Length: 288
Ligand code: MN
Image 1 (cartoon, helix red, strand yellow):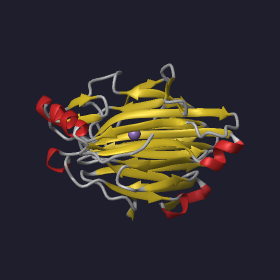
Image 2: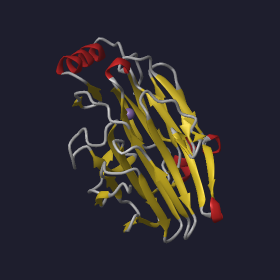
Image 3: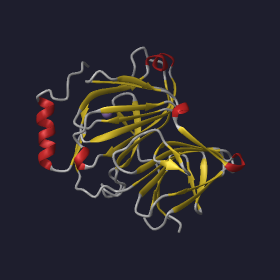
Image 4: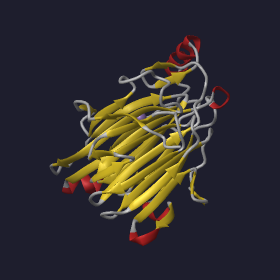
């Protein structure tokens, strides 16, 4: 059975996160907050040219609790550091999987050398919810360069499926997750074809990062988000031109969600607890 398209969503008006990230927020906001669970949020930074800047642009110190942020860089480089002494750079094609868990303070900004030179920038940040039993897990990082992602080469020189998490045709991605989900970058050559299959109940979406593709029988263009129905398993994709797709699919976490600013919990009391812990310095310290 085909997993059919529910909606193809054009990029919403962009807004700035700090001065470094110009993003289109595909969700939450366009549909029920649990519609794409375990994915709670997608901020999509479409291509933008940044002028050189001696001071790296970005977003200052802020907390997170109760979920994971997954950041993918397509053009440009993103750097970060946090209150527990972790730091790193997400290179082009790379992925950072940060488990905020019980709480981190962090800063996200353009990498220093990229910032000095300026140039094309394109990125995605996903917020992946954590099941209630894992919300207070110890904060952790997983970082992967493009080379470190698992690869499945498509037949007939169709392109490559880069598996970040979950698996594609038996190829398992390097990231470990707290609930079952799949995350792929699919890089298709012109006329390249790929079929992906996910269980019917898995919430599924695709961001067209680059190019134009025919998905089932519909055409979808750059910077659009495709939301799928939960009516089948199979999605057939063909690139009408060279294309890059970010594919996400996951088993819904059937628990209440109470989002508030940078926190994602199950109850209002847990949100109040998060603010209380934050104010008491339990997220560590980080200078601006
Ligand atoms: Mn953040």
